[in-house]
Length: 178
Image 1 (cartoon, rainbow, N blue to C red):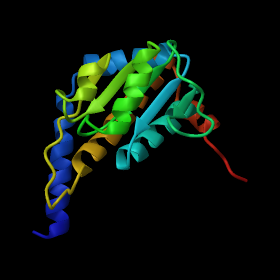
Image 2: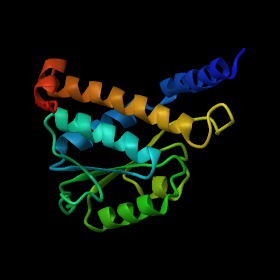
Image 3: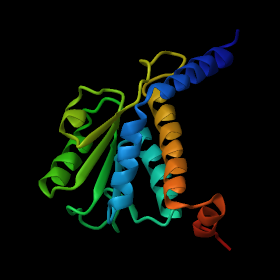
Image 4: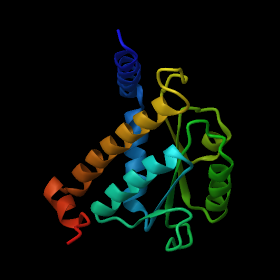
């Protein structure tokens, strides 16, 4: 086999482990999102890129979603939910955002491959992504990040269902540049 095929097999094989994710936790997270006034998403590096993709879909669902740290992001309150994405659950930025969010009684949902991490222990809800450790075929956090993207897109499908939205509804809210 080639490196490409070996790498793809490693990544795809890991993604099958997403079927082990606790669906009740996903449903609870979606309920937090739907009951929130604002949804804040935070991640560092590639986890942050995944978070941006998720926030974009939330906005296309007609929800008020923000990326923590952007200049137009409002202050967090007890009516909000904060979604933290960190494979290790020990990213200093995520821990600081969690601490600030908890101080104002915002709901905190952590998405991590490390269910015993500091971030997970302090969250209102932890979604554990069962990602294998990194390898030369999927370096650094690749397996977690790809799994997080897939899981968050599946959550969008559930949120669409709960809101009674269709793909056409989302398309109407999709940014169109003329």
